Figure 1 (cartoon, rainbow, N blue to C red):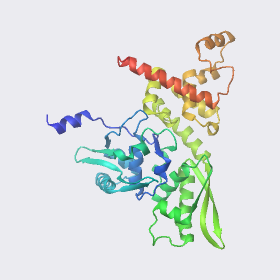
Figure 2: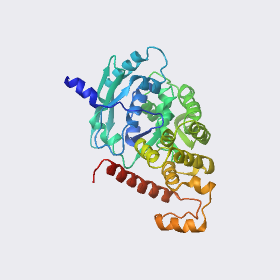
Figure 3: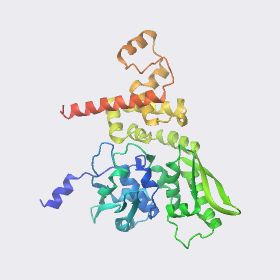
Figure 4: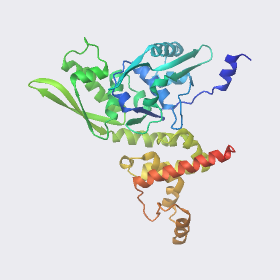
Length: 368
């Protein structure tokens, strides 16, 4: 067997899903990026495959058909279109400036398109590690599904620029700054009225119809001239609730858990450790019995619900004797006499449970 054949046999094909989480540093988001909408979707798809435990970027083999689906390419020549997009993306750079340096780096260190095999292998440039890998603070995460339906590169960029300020609820730009971040060509939309109509208002419509946030704007004027815009950012609760409830009713427990923001490896362990039915029942319980819009750490709450089986407690209230027994075996932070679990408890529950799952996984692999 040749070296190439051996390498091909060792690298597994990565599973992609619109429900995976994309995490980026806010510094990267706030850097001008001259990418098309489809190029951005490839970057987002690759970023969604980065796992919290990864210490280095890995080469990911992705099916061409999966990338075509992510980009919304439905034509019969999707192989050619994906190859062309990947080839152009390989040439693209991003410039990240700080007080100490100016970094010019290609998005991809390599892209290898295997004709006749139906897949492509992609890897991020190593210099992007601080902006996409092992993020601890000053970063923004969102589900891939939020950007996949956006066809305008400007709408994609406005989404991530506003998403990074969602908790602050507003973000202001001068017109010059907004044009720079969106990489609007100098001769395009030279008048504010055109920029507002073709870029800002289109993004407003796109985000409200297709993403988990929406916005209103307030124009900043100097005299009669508009010199800036303030975006007032809101969570798009209608989109959020309809997508979650309608979609999770039709899919399996594993995909439903991922849709809740739970990492794929943890979702698999949840289904293996408990059961398809228990995972599904508790996800349904969280969606239908709780106001999910008010839960900041939804994935942590869902993990807690599955572990403690909130669904079973709701349909079959425990007796006083059983509650006393449970208090003896549950951690001190739990109290099943209280129907509302705080966000702090959810975070601790998720952490303890993931540690337990990691120990279980290691024991199955025969590691200490």
